Length: 410
Image 1 (cartoon, rainbow, N blue to C red):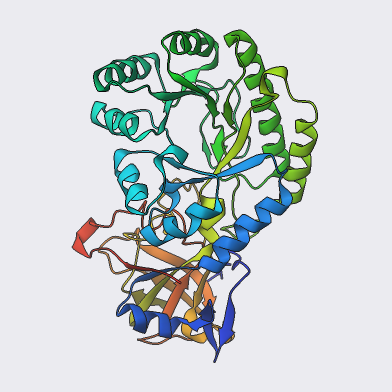
Image 2 (image 1 turned 180 degrees about the horizontal axis):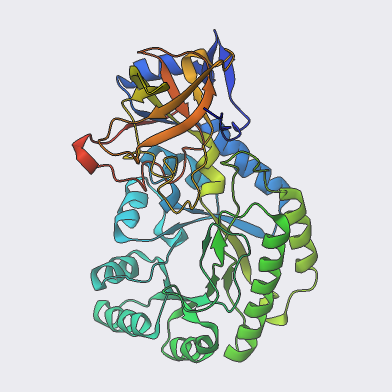
């Protein structure tokens, strides 16, 4: 069987007594503390380091917003909330999560193409900024604000004519359910301002999971030019511009980390020659995966070792119901291996070629194909890295009734 490489393990992890260690504790110790597997472990230290690295690389004027959708675990929100400048949500459910975590709703913006009236009402009442995605949503917001006797805080999400090249998910360019086509933005903005809303500017998100600094730099330049043009057409400066995010992390063999220094330097140059309508605007990036993705590890236990037609399978108690993306079923065209390791034999040589699979009754439930691993037996722990974003929050946890994984933030 031809060996298939696994993705690159992120920096920041160590070894204790031959085992994977996270924040100074072995995988076995963390599982014992949680009381079971499967288990997501999120490192506060690694999250803090990532935010600090961004602060060092980006111009001081550029704020950092956390996209809660990436990881809405309560302890993650409580930890990252004070480290960033704002939070971005996509539902009333996420609004309830950030309020339960003690975050100030005035620091929150709410995007999403299908906001229900009850969600709009909750956001207006809480003082959240609504990133409007259509004229219809904007008019519903005005009506609800009048009913509540409360002035809505409103921005417009723009569907630009360009995209983030090489992004995993393209959120701009051409027909999209997200945002308002750019040419229709000025008229709606003038209408909102005339109706007395608290005008909060524009949100322009072009794509996600890009590793090319050149592509991100180009997209950010286009966003700033478009925002300046729209500001002129609106006839008012923008109080705030959310430039979106798109910063990717390496998941697969051959992936290289984003050149953050290059992105920061280019942003600095852009800031020296901003369009007039952005002269005093609050500028921010909206990042989720980039902030928390590499800070998370998914641990599951080998419950069977079997051979079929000469192929060795390590069957675990985890799977795609917690790690849909690692299984290759979350937008991946050609399945490649995530960073995966035997956590309890982290220093051992990879002398065994195995398929690591989950416990679900479907051939889609794969965590690693033809990967060179140390010999693992029943009871060993498997680690899937880059599990801090879109794992627990974006996988079909109820599929086949196995239930949710445990989650801890250390």
